[in-house]
Every structure is written in structure tokens, then in C-alpha cells.
Length: 521
Image 1 (cartoon, rainbow, N blue to C red):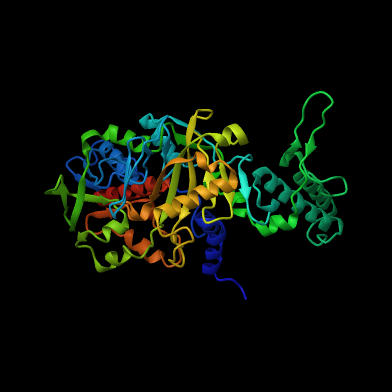
Image 2: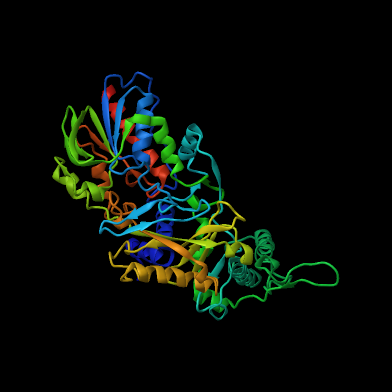
């Protein structure tokens, strides 16, 4: 019996997380891998005399204000938080992490260490975001997203002891190449290949898997050494290959294919000092246009204008404009009074929100000094299934290690994941520490000052991103494409790069294009 598309995507998400689900959607042609901007070229006086209120100072709201001001519009940005950026947030010494239930964590990390609990990397193909970084003077550095020196661990492999990622990847490649070489030599591909192409493929496979002249895999220097090359009479010794059956049983494909996703391929970038350098760059440019601690309480939209009721330092206020670009999360909009149509109000719950989490620890850089791991991600079969090493300030005394980054609620079933089912923050931190211990035995005691971010419990977010790629979400997406009177919606959830800052920018450009079209028409 064949798999339905929904079941196939669900299984992809189960073995590889949301990244695998995204990649599968792109492969099936259900969402494009990259997007094109709809930003129109507008003269400097195009919006003269027109007022626009923008709700939310995340990347979509800030990009909207930045472009509309250039076109002559009178803009105001209302932001509920005391900072710009929304999910483009950096936690560092002095930061406070507060949950909706009143739980508060205070960060006291030293040496400039930081955690980006939301977006933490910028792909080289996200050209609009990179363009804004250049315009705003935000310095960037390379983000090391993958390292062959990182570790992999599973009970089925190497007696449960961690191995280097290079060994898993190149031993797997060697065994698969050996199987393909065997098929070629048995002429099982004669119906598909000419003799010339068969010979060319065999030569390629031998090089791809580092096979001997008989098409056998015995190990490869690519997978690392027991005794590395040296000087004098010493001779290097290549590692003995892991067992193919163990590699298959371990199923570490999430880590093996991680950097294959188009948005995670080298070269990746990050702002020097933290991801919030980008929203602060926008905010510096916009100056007094951005108003903080302004929580929206009601949206009243019509055919001629929009009125926003909000509170500022506890005092009620209102603002009326010709247009509104609303970038508030749909979970927050669902709780905000408005006069939208019933179809739009239903759409607020038509996309589930991803309940992602991250946990960061301050630690001496034992992964560098002992394991030669400089950036990248280690993977393990565990309820905390990855450990992410910092790229910033390599070779320094300490750094912030991310031990856990995934979802707490299953995308498809709505049930808690094994990590999400853990009953307390202390239990989650214990699981995070245990994952580091499995990958780096005897070193988890070096972890200090943990910070746990659960996006579903962060005020004014109530989730990380909308799962607009899931079956059944198309109706909500289509509804948000329709303006509510003079109110237009924008955010990464209204793009096909959901969860990425580039998607938020493209959605902002799309909203501006539609407002410009209405003014022209």
C-alpha cells in the first residue's frame, strides 16, 4: 500500500525534524526553495501625505518601515516589547528571559558569550537579508554550520561510544559505493547504461567511495586515522570501518544530510556579536519611528483608514492611519480584539505554531581543546538530539554551547515530543546535560548557567513560526493574502521561507507592493 503525501511528510519529520519536512516539501514542489522580491521601485514622494501604522518591530515590520519611509510615507511602528527584532533576539549577559507563567531566568554569561534563541544563521542565498546588512552596516562573519570533526552517537554503533561525523559519513559512502560497484560489475544496469557510461560510472563510484581496484571498501583516510601521518619511521593507520549493519541500524541520517538542505549549505553567515545586531541596525536607522512597550489591544479596519488601540506604559492610546501592515504573530492576533471577517479570525488558528526550544550553556571550550571541533553540530539518537558548537570567538576561554534545539510538540499529531513531555525545566536541563555527556563523556560537569527558551511560552510570540507547510494550512495562507480593509498582513508565515528572516523580508516587500498597487489603482 502506497504512502499518502501526509504520511510521507510526517515520517520525514519524525526521522529528520522540521528541516527534513521542509526539504521534502521543496523536493515535492509544494514550496519553492527560494523567493523573489515583490518590492516595487517607488519615487521618494510616492507616499507623501499617507500614514502607515506598522504593528510589530520584527524583521517584517522593520523592513516595511525602512522601505516605506524611503517612498515618502509617514510611518509609525508599534512594538509590544522593549526591544526590536521579535524572534531575531540575542540573549547575553544582563538579558532576562520571561515566560508567560511568570518564570524568569537571568543571563550572567561572561566573555561576551551569547545565544540566538531564534534565527542563528544566514544562508548565502538569502540575498535580501544580506543586502540589508550591507546597507545598515551590520558586520558579518562566517558561521560554521557543519564540521566533520563533530560527533555522532547511537546505541547501535561502536558500542554506544561517540564517533566522529567523518567516519559515519565516509564509511556509509564507501559501503554504498561498494554495493553500486557490485551491481555494475554484475551488469544489472545494462538496460539503463551504455557500456561506455557503465565504465565511467564504475570509475566514479570507485573514487566516490575510495574503493580498491576490485571494488571493495576497506576504510579510507577520509574517515580519519587511528595513528595520523607523522615523521620518521612512523606509519599512519586508517580507522577500521564501522559495521555497515550498525550504520544502517543507527540511522543517523539527520546529521549526515543536515548540510545538504539548500538553506544550510556553506557558506553561512552570522552577525558579529549576535543576530539582534540586524534589528538594532534597522532601529537605529528608523530612530523615533519605532515606539516600544506599545501593546496593541484592538484593531479597527475599514475601507478608508485603520485605527489601532494600544497601551503605552499602562496608558491607553489610539492611532489612526491610512494603512496598516500587521506583522503580529497569528497566535497573538487570535487574542487581540478586532473587526476582521469571521474567515480571517478562523485563519488565526488555521496554522499551528511550532513550539521550538533552545538551551544554551556557558562552558570552557573543551570541544575545541580536546576534540578539535570548531563550530558545527554533533548528532545523537536521543530526546535531545543535537549539540551545536559556537562559531564566534574561536580559541577563546569560554563559549555558549547549544545542547538541544528542536520542537516540543509534534507538528502533525499535536502531541508532546519525548523532550516536550518532560515535566519540569529542571528535567529538560538534565536531559540537555545528559546529551552532552553522551557525546563528550566526563565533560558535562563543565556546563554552567543554563538558559532555556521555549517559544510557545515567550510573551508576544506564543510560538516560534507558523507551520504553513503542513497539509490543510493552505486555506489560512490564502485568507491572509486578502487585505482586511486597509490592513495588510506580513510575516515569514506569509512566505515560502517560513522560519527564516528572508521570508519575513519577502513578505514585507509583498505587502508594500500591494499597497502601492492600491494607491496607483
